[in-house]
Length: 132
Image 1 (cartoon, rainbow, N blue to C red):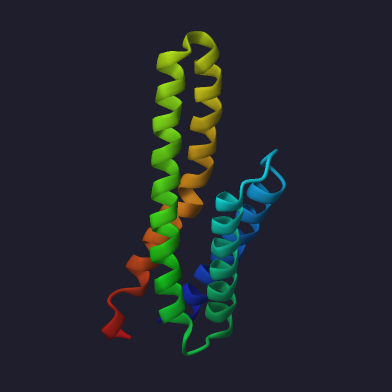
Image 2: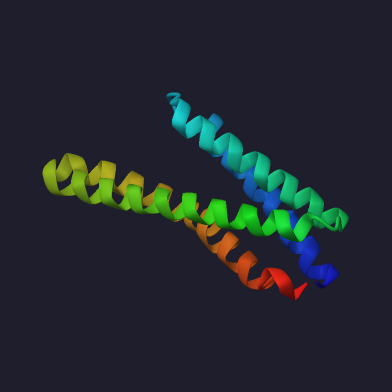
């Protein structure tokens, strides 16, 4: 595991954790326990993974792998839900629904790099569990 890659992914994990925190706890106008709970778990996992990778801890690759799998699953679920909801709004509510669909599509586009692309690329970088 290269030092450069370890530091880069550690930094990106911390950036993703802070962006999820800002997006959910500052950006959402209303609170829902399911969303807040999932967001808190993702923030904690990404923060622990990022700090562990940046400090070069021996447990960091295992935590990063588990974190990436969980975040990837939640991210794919979020993007799929947003896409389905956007298509429903656009189809049912006509021009008014298309405005809401655009907002949901923008949220999905903002979530895609940090909750899908980052964990997928991190899993590729980490490789198989027995390799390292």
